[in-house]
Length: 310
Image 1: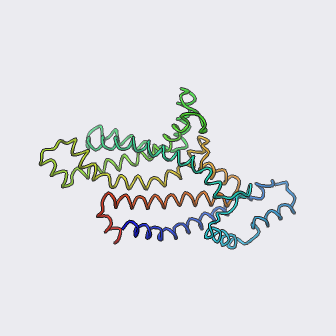
Image 2: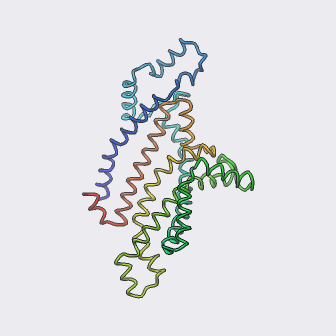
Image 3: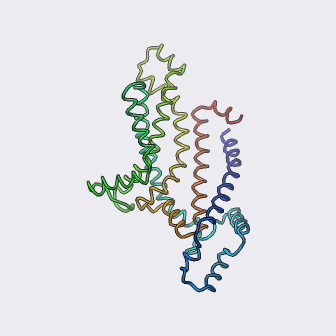
């Protein structure tokens, strides 16, 4: 059952990945600037410029460059960086562990904050505590990473001196980036946790448990929590992909040497193959997150298999 679902989802994501590759390829070539200028400078001799342009295949028609790139992807070749001629996939793999470390810390922070906050809001639905909890959640969604990050740096690094300002060499360097990246995710998950718990406590299983005289605390954490876990885990898995895309801004703010920082550097250098490779890797994580969400939903609630088959 799960193997069949995996095969179908992987097959369905091939057009999605092809669309991502196509859109990113053509949009990058619409960005003003010439990678030859970035490599040689504007004062380079015309003959040197033309020789480099020919060596990089930039003198080919755009459609032909696109076909060459897609052909390379089908052969497992992600291209070479225009700056140092290193393999794109090798550069991505070098930076990926730092991004995965930051993403894992952010997801853990979001989970530890969202579940208690969502439970507290659900238990006090219609009361002032619920309004406070949802207000905090709305604030977390509304604050952008590029503002929250510098504010956290100003407070905890500059004013209080408790944590490092940037980089990942010092102990505790991951704390501020993880909070910055995980805040919006925690806000989304807390709202999902609240609505899932409120729906779960009205389920027949919870009403039956009340009829047998079980305490409300046991009903909420034993019976309702299992029912509420299905949409919460699904949402958590889906948000795993968005963490990587959000890391582009967070890593830039905190000078975190991960995939997001590599993407920004490649864009500034007009390094087309490297930008395309970074975006493709992020898209692959989105696809993986969607597949994990489907599998998690089936494992927690096998009745979803029929819905997915339909």
